[in-house]
Image 1 (tube, helix red, strand yellow):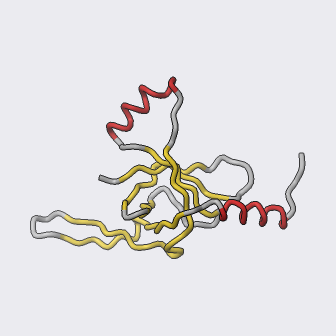
Image 2: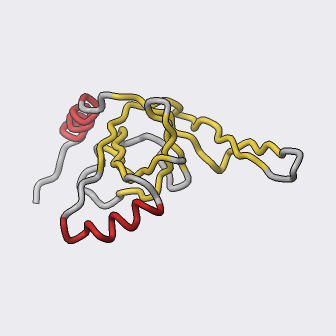
Image 3: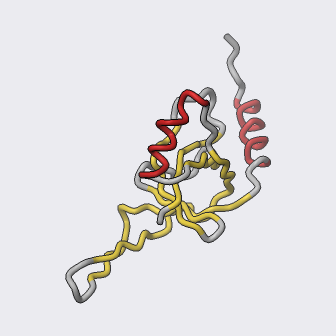
Length: 128
């Protein structure tokens, strides 16, 4: 087993950051402002996270043919899934919403099982 030096890890993080072509705004739903309407309903408006705008990459999630039926059924309920990649220190959490290219996405799953802490990844779906 080989261990990475701090310099190696910093270089890998810089390499990943170079491959994040877009920017997104991470919003924490837990810090939402609630506006009550006249009918007794309410609307939550998420506040921007401390880090606010971060570099990101959004890619469609590809599925194998064995997962196709389950994935199609899930997409009817949830929507098309995308993989979000952000820097390793971005404030990404399960209750987050992400604004990317004027569209809002909900984080549905954090991908925390991967080697070396060089990025953070999540599965997101567009909110409708």
